[in-house]
Amino acid sequence: MLGRIIVKPVAKKLMDAIVGMASDPSMMPVEYRIPGTGDEIVVNNCKVVDVIHGRILNNATVVIRGKTIKNITQGSSPAHIHGRALDLGGRYVLPGLIDAHCHISVSSTFYILPTIGDAVRHFRQIRRQWPTSVEAGVTTVRDTGSFPLMLKGLIQDVEDCKLKGPRVFHCNSMLNVMGSHPDIPPHHINPLAKPASLAMGSIGADFRSDKELARTLKTNLPGASFIKLTVDRHSMFQSKGAIPVYTDRQLRTIFDFAQTHGLPVACHCATSWGLKRMLDYPVHSFEHIVSDIRLPDNVIQILADKRISVVPTMSLGSAYVINSIRAHIADQWLNDFVENEIELANDYLKNVPENQCDAKIHAASLKRMGLYCKRASGHLSRKHLYLPDAPNFVRVLTTGADNLIRMRDAGVNIGCGMDAGMPLVYFGTLHREIELLGRIGFTNLEALRTATINNALILGREDVQGSIEEGKLADLVVVDKNPLDDLSALEKPVLVMKEGRIEHSLLPIWKSAA
Ligand SMILES: [Zn+2]
Image (tube, rainbow, N blue to C red; front, side, top):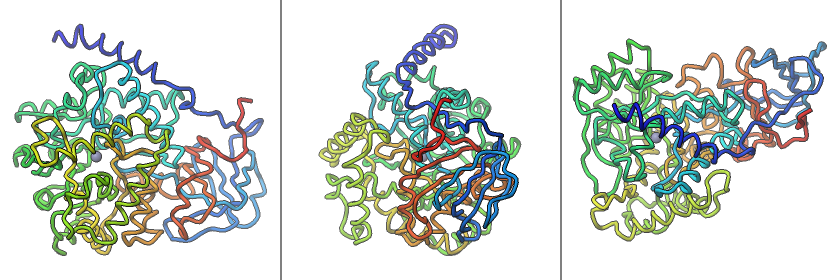
């Protein structure tokens, strides 16, 4: 009570002041206006990547009216142009990318120092993630666990044009039995977590009893477009072991609530125990990939038959295998493919651009991983140190990859996300997950579909986004090369449009406040 009356408004004021310090004009939308024109944009001289039919529409013209695509033609431009033409010089246009698993109000860190300076640094990192996403071609994100009050503030800033960012669909907090995944008391990451949560909200909506669950479901509902559960019974951290799980009665309560409110349920699930248990419930998606066993074909077929999507976040397989931890991985998991992925991940971590992660936050994470590795033989979690269990993560790239390919072959809808917001996994790099899917065995078209039409299907928005089609939102990404030939084309978009508005451009057009 006292917290609500006195502490909460003070905490909110302090938070607003810190967020103000963390703001930066470079994160604000640039006005890419079309001087003296009507409300149509005619994008011509381009090649449209049709992700539905797997083809390129050469010499295409895309007419955009307001926020949507009015029509697409090939050959000569339409006779009546009411707006300004945008000549793309033969470049490729693909649909705005969707990141289906991320945490855009979380600052990719193992630890936050209890100082104002570090708080500002982390808020700046969180704000920077929004423009960085758009600049990398991501026009939509599905946030799978947030600090709800802060997330809503940032969404509002995007709507008020104070921040450049993607549209966001979210679940608010993750719905957890007290002590279950991510099984870290928040004050072990941030000593000021408790007072901060009054202004930011909490990433876990933890409950201790059936009564608390009923209350938590309601408080976590406003604005949410899905419910996020975590269903594994083992910690993902070295030396932690078993963690609490929902009772059957609690699961029935959650799914009844979800059905009443028309909300899909997404389940964090990296193990066969969690997956098999949840097949008795109307799950919408499994997040991450089961890696502890080779799943039986009949189980995979059930996923396909029930139209359950999977967002495998394969990048996690190598994200935490920095060089200092390789000694802890048994040879049986280190085949050539895994070795190559570890090398690619380590190369990336050596040169992370500042817009993807603040240099000091990144350096602190690498240092902390090194420190954890040195102590890995002890009971780290007792000392409040949380080392991702690298041998299990590596299995994502072996057993997990095998499960994933068989899911694809069975017709399971595979989405794309990489858990950006977690330590060492950064926004602006979704292309790395797409390229990894390519190396695992997806065709370039299949890999591109995961981040476009497949993710749109997961959001239930396949009628309005996920491909370039008449009537859909004008979310466009322009790249120099054909991504169906070479997925590295996605690494540097030259222009990004969200709902008919150019949000990012390296091309010399319209960049003026005129
Ligand atoms: Zn996640």
